Every structure is written in C-alpha cells, then in structure tokens.
View: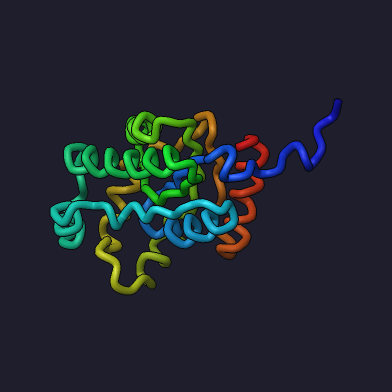
Length: 185
C-alpha cells in the first residue's frame, strides 16, 4: 500500500512525544527557529543558552571559548530537561549548539529517547553578519571562529535534518518541519 500524506502526519503530541534539538554555531538562528518550530509542533521550547551556568556565560562574554569540561554539565542539564518533558508526555524542542558528535551523543543519552536534530547551516559571511547585528547577547562575534573550528557537521548521522539559513525564518522552519516529517518523527 503506498504512503499517503496522512501517513506522514505529525504524531499527536499527547500520544507520541517527540524530542528535537535545533543546532548550529552561534548566529545561525537556533532560538528563533526552535521557538517557532516548537509552536508548530505543539511542543515545549527550551532555550539552551539560558541553561548555561554563569561561569560559562562570563567566559564567553570576554571572548574565551568553552572547553569540553565547561560543556558537559550544560549538555547534561539540557538532556535532563528534555527527558523531564518527555516523561510528562510532552514533546520538546531545544536550542543547543551541539557542535561535536560526542556532544550530540551525550544529548541523545540524556534525553532518553530518539532525539532528532535540525542542523542550521550557513556561510561564514552570513553568520558573521547575523552575529554583528545581534543586540544584548553574551556571545561576541570573535568566538564564531572557535565555534566553526569545533563544529563537526552531522553529515550522515541518523535523525538529522540540515537546513540552509540563507532564507526567512518561516521558510527555515517549514523546511525543518518537512524534513522531520520525512523522517517520520
């Protein structure tokens, strides 16, 4: 029997909670995309940057890149918060840079469920421009280089939808949702 569009409908969040991380380097739009995607999916949104301990924020604010020891506890908190939502029967979307494969694996373990990723991909020039236009964010543009150097693109990883950020936020969200549907969330 052929698949129909009805076969690919998003599951009812009350029946089958889903977990999605919107990932990428600083300036790619994780928060804007994640928040809008969560609304479209009927999910709770968790802003990953808000879960950084103050010590991490202080380091980044003065241009010091985070190391693995700084990131592990933060990743664990994001995974735990996602697992809590799932255990309560709620779908959840979180924003998190998730730059390295090992970080994504830690998040997968922490969430305790099949975790999908939406990778927001963009050119260095576009990312620099967006970071330069942001107001009131603790992450300086100077740290973009260290994030790009750390980034291990999730090419070939299961459950990952890659979306170009060279378009309007609504188009990015629509493409991400379509990709998640194709993956049969």
